[in-house]
Each structure stands twice: as C-alpha cells, then as structure tokens.
Image (cartoon, rainbow over all chains, first blue to last red; front, side, top):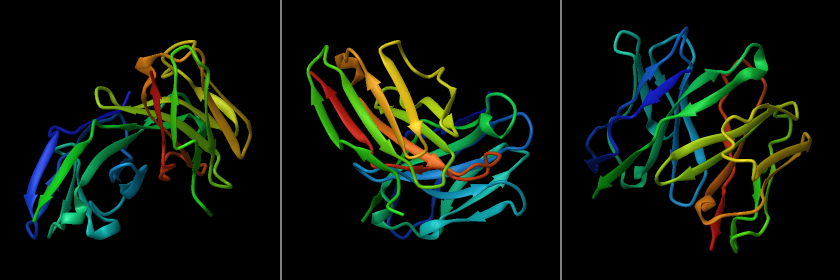
Length: 118
Length: 115
C-alpha cells in the first residue's frame, strides 16, 4: 500500500516568515499527491495536488508544494505566513486497492498543526 | 452546488443506542468516502463506494458499523449498538470518477459523542 509521513506534529512560525510543512511518501509507480487543510470544526479543504508535470505546484491561498522524486518528498510551502493560515494540514497519496478506475482511495498522513504567531 | 452535506452536525447518544449518520454527495460525483477522525488515530478511511457500490470496507472497525448507498445522492453510516469508543468526528467526502487524479470534497463532519 502507498503511504505518506508527516514527520512534524506541530510547526510554529512567526507571521510574515516563510513556512514549510513536510511530507514524504512511499509509493510504487507514479505518485499522485495532495495537500488538504482543516480549520477548527470544519471539514478538510483541498489545497493543491501533484499528478504529473512541473515539480512546483501552486495552489489555493498562496500555498505551493515542491515534488522531489529523489527525496520522495512533497513539502508544502508559503513565502509569507499569515495568522489565518493556522490550521491542521494533511498530506495524502492516491492508493490503489485493486484494478480499474473504481479501486483508488486517498490515504492521509497524521496531520501537522501549523501555528502562525503574530 | 452546496457541497457535500452531512447531517446531523452533532449527535450525542447513549451507549447501546443506534446512530445513523447521513451524507449527500456533490451531484455528479461517482465516489463517496466515509472517514473517521480522532486525536489518537488521526483520519481513517472506513469505507468507500464507486457508483453506489462498496469497493473497500476493510476500514470498518467492527460488525457494529454498516454503510449503505441506496442511490447516487445519499449514503448512511450506521452504528448499532454504539459504544463510547465510537466517539469521533465522522466525515463524508465525494469526488468525480477518474484514475485518482481528482481531489475529494469533504463535508463539515458529524461530531458523535457516545456517553
């Protein structure tokens, strides 16, 4: 099965500083990778995805992620953090459980809590 | 589209009672997923459907849990009987058919408390 790991339970960053939330993956074949954000008492919201193509993927709210095949990483980044970015961030990978288009699911990492300090 | 709609938002029930959680996916989406989120275990996939057919229910913790999708616009997750350890936030998500390259859209979740 495919998997992702988020090595940090929590990341603290000062407002205005760049932020990075780390994710590494383990897959067989080509990875399909996703980032989601969860604000308090809300469902998960899609931020961005890597399927193929350019290694730097741009997403919502000024976030971007860099796919690095040699390091099997897909770190989420933002040049300048906002207090409103404080939330729980999940990395996810497409996981096949059989054959055909009906056999995929998303497997999520444990999440990283991002706190942006004013 | 109003997005994925879950009901109720909050449910408090006594141990041993039956609990039914409901989900309306986004119209036109062929996949529907049920997840459970707890502090201890994070986000766990319980079961998912493709074109109303259950594809993988290996994440369903026990026989007390069951899920149905009678049509493309409605799914239920039932726990009978409920236990305190079932307390969690349950999310429903849907996505359009594809080879796993489309993102899933999540509902607001149902916070279940079993006392």
